[in-house]
Structures are given as C-alpha cells and as structure tokens.
Image (tube, rainbow, N blue to C red; front, side, top):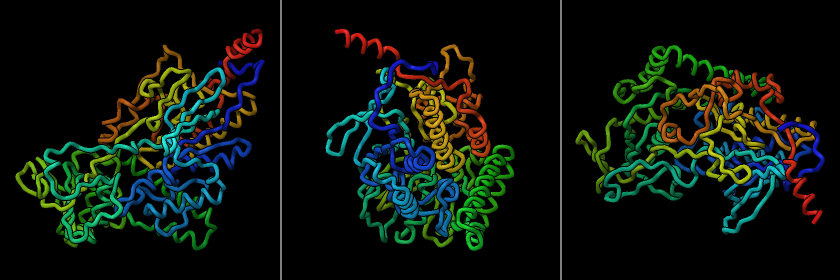
Length: 507
C-alpha cells in the first residue's frame, strides 16, 4: 500500500481514535492525545461503570502495586504520595485526578463492552460493535483502535481444579471476585498460592483472622523493599515536584533494569542476596524449604514484599507458610498429599489469572478474523499486516506503565505523521515469505504465561518485530527509529470504493 494521492476522500469516522479501557493504559493514551494530538478526537469505551481497570476490579484486602509508583505512574504526572508502593485506592485517586484535571472524563463512555471490531479497507476505518449494560447494541466507527484493556480475562479467573471442592463447608473466595462484606475476623484462613496476590492478602488478613496459612506448591522469590522511597521523599523537600519525580523515576528504572540483568547473568549472587534479606527478616522462623524456589530469580516475576510485611506476620505467629501438594478439599479444610490436614473456615484460591488477547474482542480485517498468534508484534505496539491497530502489553520485568507511555507517545507521533502526509491508513507490512527468526521473549516460567502461550503474538530478534523487554533500550530506540522505517506503509482507503461509487452513480 503506497502513499500515492487518492482521487477520493475516505468516509470520515465518528472518532479518530477509539480507546478501549479506562485503566492505566487508556487514561495514559487519552492524556498523551490531549498533549500531542489536540486536534484529533477520541473516545474511551469502558465496560465498567467507573475508571481504574484492574485497580477498580480488584478489591481484596491490601490490594497494592507490585512495583514502585515512580515507574508505575505516568511519565507526565508526578506521583505525590509518600508511599511509593501504593494501595489500590491511592492509585485510583491518582487516575481519577488525571481524568478530571486533564478533562478526560467527558470522553469516556461507561458501561460499554466492545464485542467486535472490523477494519473496513474501503472506508479506511474500524467498525466497532458495542454492547451496553442493558444488552442493547450500537455501532461506532473509528480511524484507529487502541486496545488498553490489559491481558486479564475480567469475566473468568484461572481456577485450579481441586477435588472435593463441593464438600468444603466454609467459604471459598477467588481474589478477582472478592465479596464486599466477607467476615473473616477470628477465622482460620488458608490462602492457596505464593505469588503477588497471595503475598499481599496474607499479611493483610492476618490482623483480623485467627491465623492465615499460605499454602504453596512451589516457593517464590521475594524482594524486600521499603514502602516509602526515602530518596524520593528527600528530593521532594528541596526540588520542584516534577524534577524530583523525574530523578526518582530515572533512578528506579535503572535499578529495575540492573537487578533484572544481574539476575539473568549472575543468578547465584542474586539468590544469595535475596535469601540473606529473607533470613534477616525472619530470624529463627526462616524455613529453607518454604523460601528456596527451584528456579532462578526473574525466571518468574520477582515478588515484592514492602516493609517485609509478610515476614513480620510470620514472626508474630499470625501467619505461616506450608509447602505441600493438595490431595483434596473436605468439609473442614484441605487434606495434603503428605497426609497433613489444614483446618480452614475460609479458603482463598489465589491461583492466578487467566490471560486473553485483545480483551476477547473479535478483531477482523475486511471480515477476515485476526488470529494474533499468527502475527508478529511490530515495535511492541502494532501487529504485522493489521492496519490502524495498537495495543498495550506491559513489561514482564518492569512496570506496566513504562510500556504504556512508550506506546501512547509512538501512536501520537504516528497520527501527526499521517496527518502531515494526508493519509488514513498505516500498516506494518510483513511478506508471507519473510525470513524472520522467531524469538521467545516470554522467557518466563510463570503459570499465567505458560497457559496462554498459544494465544500470544510472535516476536523476532529484529527490534522492529518484537515486544522487547528492556525499557532503557526501548525508550531510546523508539525515539531514534523513524516512523517511516521502510516497514510501516502509509496509504488511503482502497480504490475499490471509487469504482463502487462510480457504478452506483451510473445506475
């Protein structure tokens, strides 16, 4: 598809950019458009009744960020709270403030679920079908579709199969659907899992519960750090807010990058460092079996323990960790393969989330369904041979928002480049007989990734065709590499439209 001048004008869509999701990715894209593309129209469609995405959905005890807010926060909006490891309500406040101060809220269409989106090549726009909370369907057209809906299945979490589940006489809860008025005061709680969600829930529930047991099949690597960033709070006393934020963000980005690369190149040193910190936190309560994973750090996401709260709960006798396999549930708790029994009044199945691609939206181009597993990522933003479509898939080894900021900036730059050239379509072209070598950028053994590999797009070693996992490199490369890189092709609505219109006029 070239960028030759068209002899006709494409039908003007209802909106220039339709943003799916009013969470971190969607609000971030809207803010970037306000700053960089003020002449372009946008609408955010959000299936829920309020903004926040993940941070509005998850309501389990202690829900918080699993990375610091100086990198989970946006590049354009300083994080002002004293705690850099923030709780869910604080993150929601941050997003709501941005939506209000930047006049984004009026662009949001709530209670609107996207069912399907088809790119009409003859009109050079997306035809998107929405469904309201009342079941009524409507249609909107958009020049671009920007998917900021994340990768969680908001309808169905991952539920491991446990024999005898129906026999348990207490309450079983999945963190994704936490009951608003769950009373666990004075009760025995078993939390199944050892990832970020379990590590958050255990110390939070331990204050009220009689006892909380974290039941893990496999240990997880934990990193202890203060919930407050002392350097950030010090800088804020003497420097302007934005400058202090930029310095702290720079520091934390580099630190994240250093720790990840050190874990990959010198895993034994990192193991010793992490283990030493855990031993110091637990003292005589340290259990080698419970805190020595069978994999290297950062082969799964390193789990953050702010202020060592999990270990403080264990030391206080309010919580414990059991490493074993589940045989079955019974009326009073969980029978383990070792023969032991865990008594429980409440069981929390923090067994993970279910990943989906494109928010389960039926994506097609000219009526032909798009299977993302057959496509290559293009610069971590678009997909091979799919026009005018962008998506955010955050970093696995760093904060989600770092990638969201890159993608939003890139698409805004592209929109401006398209306007300057007078074109309506941009598509990363990949020939059927390409010689790209497929590279596994999902080099993580985390369960949620392993279960979803068959859904995920491909990546190659070539930077243009991958979802790279190095923010420091990515942010510089994306700025330096030109929009018109020889791969991205610009064009217009298909000339077939002209022929069709001429025929209809002749009739």
